[in-house]
Image (tube, rainbow, N blue to C red; front, side, top):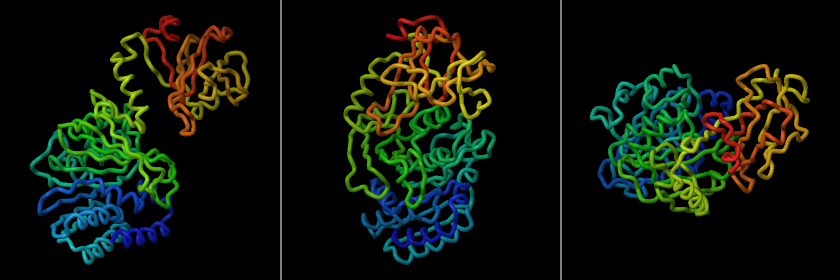
Length: 428
């Protein structure tokens, strides 16, 4: 069944340009990924199983899950609900589900809902973050949700404002609504970007998602560009399995693979739940080795946030491509040095290095800062680099000719909370 659905999907992909599908946030799951996701479920021991695929697309994930249930027990009754709003894809989905109905040995009840998954249920979700008796509750939810940013005032964001902070992305609204749609003890398996695991925009979502659901399994892709079959997408992506319960498991199963087409040689790591999910449920950490678990446990044992010792981490002030008119190639009157991640070398800040636009005009006060001691930290590091966390000490005395400097937003800097001169403490 899955082979047939994937074959029909490939024909659809060829007929529709990527630019058209990108507008809808529509990228299809590979066959191997779909089978792996379906394999993560612990099948419920009951005669009737209710399934939900909230971003059904062509039905790839639904087909994979039905195949998995059939292998588990082909005498079961299965009720599948698929949400899809793209008219072209609905026709393909309907054709694929009809094929599945004819081929499957299960007693199948198949339903396609051509309404917006979020907006059609917003009244049920609003103001009620616990299980409601009125909406249908499902045993299993599987999804590759759409992915695109929403305006703060978008109807989807307004209808789920309790899980929104700032400008949301549609994918995490899907995940929150799916958890709401689960019965107590039900399971959810999603393939989503890693971005939700940290960052202010996802704060309210994490609070809800990790309060009412507990992570049991995580799968990480080592390669960013081999996740979606036949799609060229650079995205840090993960598969997460969540159990709707208030009781956290002792361990989280963390697997990883090179890409989305080979899950046979997965690495497996068992990580303590409290190491993966912070005690205050503010962050989700993604260790892939025992060494990384040990580092996390050591950091968590410190127990003191930076603010409690007079320090604060901030993001570099200058978004260079938005301030092109301020950038300069050489030093001059009313210019300041602009520090990039490339200036962090071996724990020290090296400047200049002959890079373009190493200086900028100081006319905008919001993008300059005092020339004082800082700890610079790269926000992004390449996977090939030996250390994912790369820092460098910035000593103001090494650049006495400048009263002010600027930092590009691809680095963070640790500063004193009160902006007083705590040079020795910061450097230490």
